[in-house]
Structures are given as C-alpha cells and as structure tokens.
Image (cartoon, rainbow, N blue to C red; front, side, top):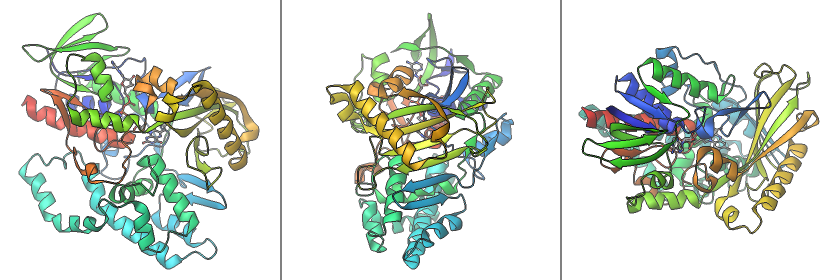
Length: 487
Ligand SMILES: Cc1cc2nc3c(=O)[nH]c(=O)nc-3n(C[C@H](O)[C@H](O)[C@H](O)COP(=O)(O)OP(=O)(O)OC[C@H]3O[C@@H](n4cnc5c(N)ncnc54)[C@H](O)[C@@H]3O)c2cc1C
C-alpha cells in the first residue's frame, strides 16, 4: 500500500513526489511519457535535444527551493545565472535585462528623454511590493500557515500587507499611470511583454500585486540549466528513486477509484492501492480518469479560466553552429509590431541553447514560442491554416528582430496546441495556467486543492501556478498537507 501516488511528472508532480520521498513516505510517481517534465521537459529528435516549452528556470536564488534541493542532495545539474538573462527587442526598444536590478533600471534610464525619476520611483515601488509578496509565494510553508510559527510570521508582517490595499483589484496600467509612466513606451512595452509570459495577460488587465511581484522573477535566481530543463527533471526522478520512491515511466494512469482503504490506481496493467493521490493534471484531466465524480464548482471555474486562456504555437529550430553566434545560451523576447496584440506570432520568446550542449558539435537547437488564444484556436474552421499563418509570422519576426540567428537556421520543426495536447494530455493544448486578470477572485483558493478526500490537484491551475518554480512550490506545499494528513 502506497502512502501516495503522484500522477504526472510536470514540475508540480515532481516536487510533490520529491518532498514526500524525502520524508520517507512510500510514494509512486506515474508519468505517461518516457521522460519527465511535461511542459518543461527536454525531448530528443533527430539526435538533438530540444526544450519542449519552458526554457528559463527560476528558483536557484539563495534560500530558494531548487538551490536548497540541489545543494542538499548534490543533484547532478549545472545551473548558470545568465547576465543578461534576456534581451528584449520591441520597436525601437532594445533592453538587456540583467539579474542585477540596478543595471536593468539603468537601461531604461539611458533611453533618450526617459523620465528617469519616475522610472526609479516605479521600480522602487515594484520592489517594495515584490519584497512583501515574494516570500509568501516562494516558501512552501507560508500558505496556509500550518502551525503557530507560520501564523506568527504573517502576524508580524501584517502591517506590510496594508500597502497592498490600494492596488488590489486594480490593473497594472493604473500603477504605471500613478507614476506618470503610461506614455513612456519602452517601459509599457516591457511590462506588457513580461505580464504576457508570466501572469498570462496584458497591463490593461493584469492584477497589480501579482504583476508587480512576478516582475521580480528575473532578479531572483533565474537562469539556464545546462543540457536543458529535462536534466533537472531527470535528476529529480533519480533522487526520488534513491530516496525509496517508485517510478512508473512510461506509466499512464487510466483510472482511479475510491476504495475502503483509500484509492485504487490503474496504471499500465496493474492496480495499486494507495492512501492518497496527488494529480498533476488540469481539472479536466482528472475528470477523465475519475469520471464518476464531477468536480466541485471552484475547480470547474478554474478549468474554464485556463481553457479561456492560452495555447502555444512553437517553432523548434535546428541551427548550424557558427563562430558568429553567442557561445552561451541566448534568450531573446521580441515583438514585431508594437501596436498589435502581443500574441499570434507577433510576440515571440526565442531560446538558443549553448554551444556545447548538444550531441552534435556542429548543430545547436532553439525553441521559439508564441501565445495563441485557445478559444479562437478551438473555434477556428481551419486550425492547420491558422497555425501555419502564425508560424509564418513568427519566422518574419525572427528575421526582423533576431538577425544574428536567422542565417544559420537549417530546419524549422513546427509545434502547436495539438502537440501539447498529444504529449502532455492537456485538454485542447491549453498551457500557461490561470491568467491573473484583475479581480478579487485572485485571492481565493490560495491553499492546496483537495478536491476529494485524500485527492489533491497540483500544477499550473493551482496557486501560485504559472511557471516551473510556481508549480514546484505548489507541489511542495501540497506534499506538506499530505504529510500532515498521513501523520
Ligand atoms: C511554450 C511555453 C514556454 C514556457 N516558458 C517557461 C519558462 O521559460 N519558464 C518557466 O518557469 N515556465 C515556463 N512555462 C510554464 C511552465 O512550463 C509550466 O507552468 C509548468 O511546466 C507546468 O507544470 P505542471 O506541473 O502544471 O505540469 P505539466 O507540465 O502539465 O505536466 C503534467 C504531466 O502529467 C503527465 N500526464 C498527464 N496525464 C497523465 C496520466 N493520465 N498518467 C500519467 N501521467 C500523465 C503529462 O505527460 C505531463 O508530463 C512555459 C510554458 C510553455 C507552454
């Protein structure tokens, strides 16, 4: 009898299983695919390695989750904090975004006629908000405060939460207006692009506290995992096994059912018994393997929000290595037409792997992604033509904005929401988690999501969601609750 079966090895499931295994619980991790990581995995094609979706990894700052796990268990991975981390190119704007806050702010201040005083005041305010919220989001034991010391931690800093009141339920554009920066185009463009890739919305709609907090991601332990994010996922799987966990990979869970002792899980040709289950699935994914029970309305609501959100259109590039290319990993976020919406190929995130990272010394790979509205995608009469049109647009933006790479591209391998649906089993290929659009609803459901007795959901539909680090924190937090229940 297992203490817990974890279904899915996205970063939510990985960190749940990791945390339970390190507490000596009898845990099984089941993953449909032959490799772990889900949307943040590294796959092999034509003898080369490609990042499936996520390319930048966070959580390696001092005292952060992955830094702690790496050092405690000597995980065999190499994390490089890049400087600059990302190059941002949009219209006339060219910003190198450094992990050093001051250096990044100086870039904005150096723009001709920049309102330097307002820019500095805005970033100081942004830092203040991030300093309040980041420790709450970043530490698995903060929400809910399981014990007296956790509660005391919140009580001691409760006066700081008061500073959030003026910006709760307000879009980010209002904050920018307060600093008279709503007409300073480079910062508006930067904030829009940043909100799009973090909290999955634009500054007109972004809930300010979430937006201002996640803007800090670049300054807090973000960089590159040598060999790809899958290297970390694999290292975690191996460590779970070393700590006594069982791995079923490939091992698709077909059905779960309640029993007298807890749960029966049908994986491969086996049925295993467990006291609890953590499903690293979207609510619709859970309903598929547990159809007898309809999920309660809050979970359905989340699913609707995710499904009304985003999918990703991809181009995986094979690139001939060339001395003119940067040797280190190279991340460029760029926008073709600054006046058009930051989606559908107009806004792309391009990540080129390092020169010594691939199996072929003459070839490198890059992953390029763009957002697509999943509602428009699923309702489109000719999905294939729509994806092809977006991929043409992506190529155009690559050509216009990243000329250092384009001459060396040997091949484009396309991907679409259908690819994500096929590989990660996410309904309609919706990715990116819950868009944090303005409203009080963002402050509901901040706890682990127990959807049935001893059955929890983790992943990017669960707070804090929306990135590898956030899903991992959500997983570790859920594991803590499972541990409490088991004890
Ligand atoms: C294009 C793109 C770019 C991104 N860029 C970044 C980035 O640079 N940095 C960042 O931090 N985040 C990024 N993200 C977000 C990040 O990848 C996700 O938030 C995170 O990886 C989601 O993790 P998850 O825990 O929700 O699990 P998922 O990734 O959804 O994984 C779920 C796993 O469960 C498995 N599974 C499904 N059904 C079953 C079943 N029945 N039985 C067994 N296994 C099953 C799937 O195969 C999958 O491996 C990006 C996302 C995308 C799509």
